[in-house]
Amino acid sequence: MKSIDPNDFKVTEKIKLSKIPTLLKVKGDDDEKIEKLDKVQAKLSKQQDTMYAHNRYGVLICLQGMDTSGKDSLIREVFKEFNPRGVVVHSFKTPTSAELEHDYLWRHYMALPEKGKYAIFNRTHYENILVTRVHPEFILAENLPGIESVEDIPKDFWKDRIEQINNFEKHITQNGIIVLKFYLHLSKEEQRQRLLRRLEKEKHNWKFSLGDLKERGHWDEYQEYYEEAINKTSTKDAPWYVVPADDKEMARYIVAKIIWDTMQKHTDIKEPVLPDNIKENIGIYKQQLENES
Image (spheres, helix red, strand yellow):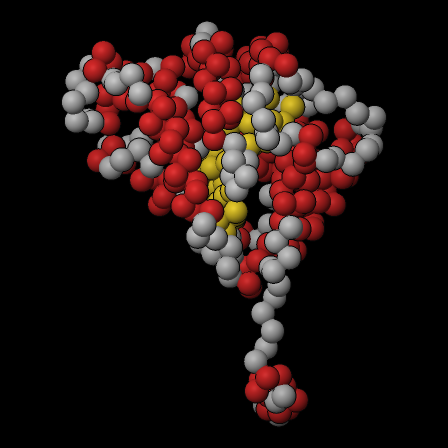
């Protein structure tokens, strides 16, 4: 199986989602894809330990995609070799009453990674220009000044939010957060098949929700708004990657490979060097500890 080039998936110019394949056809079976993923996992895990010791950067992984696009299983498989202290997963659902007492980005600021750690946003701050755009009535729960009904939402409301998100990402990247955003590009037919499997296989029944069917009915709207969001927020320091997601094993490997290749560009991430006064006396400290036995 040929090596993955992250640039093949990176959004650097205006895209049309309908023109981008949802399945990447490559030579190699699932076992080969899993083997390649395992190798990248191991390297990422070691590199994260080094980043933790370096203590200068945090990494924010943003995952977006339609229902059943494979976000949960991707997180499980790509990051399973990480030291648990080095990665935190945040799944952003409907805002709580406490979160609604703040602006819409507040809960995302609160979940940003500490230096030396990864944070994974399973659904992200982009929900605020996707779900709320498909269902603008959700905006009313934010209790914003001057907005008492959907009709009160200003014409430039979504344009302003996109600009706010760009500013948010610019701010955090300038303060040591490495941002990678992945859109898991699923076909409507593959989603249908995955929803059917949830209904047909008893062990997967719990995953099915009537909400899945409801949101499927808004497929075209979501594609339109995803496309606009990706085109207007893929920047040099916070790029979007459109990852074909009909093949879960391949999607996981692509994401892992992109993360690994990106992290290799940060050549300053190295383990700290011991101060000279400690290094010169290592033998003394070792002897001191050995004499205790």
